[in-house]
Length: 160
Image (tube, rainbow, N blue to C red; front, top):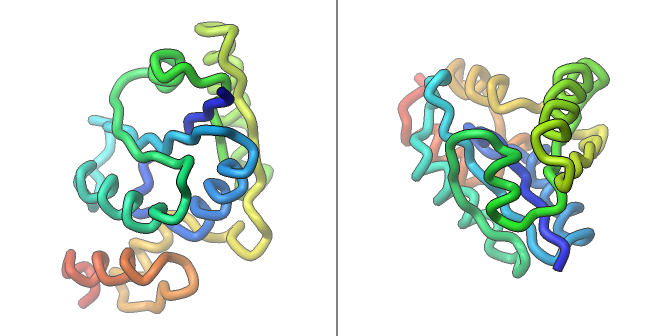
């Protein structure tokens, strides 16, 4: 069975993330979307909220599951029996940092590959950070996130 882990903060999940997940779901038998618990970040949504949102929007994908983890991604991938870690790229500027992480992960665990996927051009400008900022200033994020996420952003009262 071919297993891939797609890790990230997903704070919140965007159409760019969903584009990558949809494409990876067609390439692997099992895809684990893994929400990272990073104590160095202060997310808008709690891990449980992010997991719930992802589970709801990913319901139609029979081979995609959602989990959360803390620690090294490569260790999590190995425990899950994954052959690959998926990393989405929006622009060439993302590549340098992602390459360094991939090389480090390969040094730590040779059996796990990193696969880079470029998001589709129409999503290349979307980031979770930008979505939160736009929502905070009462901008329209309808074309950037699923309606569930848009509602949850409003529920967080970040939209004045």
